[in-house]
Image (tube, rainbow, N blue to C red):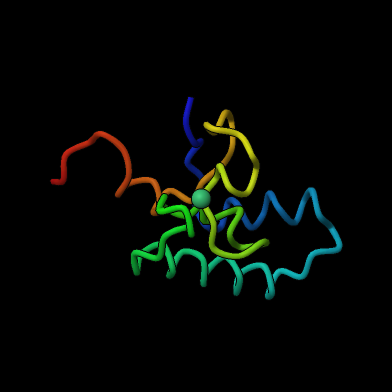
Length: 91
Ligand SMILES: [Zn+2]
């Protein structure tokens, strides 16, 4: 259970592979602004951390509000947005 970590560039590549009509520049811009929102502590309207990858296309919201599912299963998330989450103690 949980997100599958992926790097920013890996995700861009993957997304462009499955969405050949997507514009790389736009995708990078949207994804970057979602990462920045996450790092700035922007939360979903329900109070959860935002899901960066989903937020890049639909606006800043958490996984549950975007997908209607309670937990991610094999869904990607940008690695830098996962590290702050979860059970690991800060180093
Ligand atoms: Zn939410």
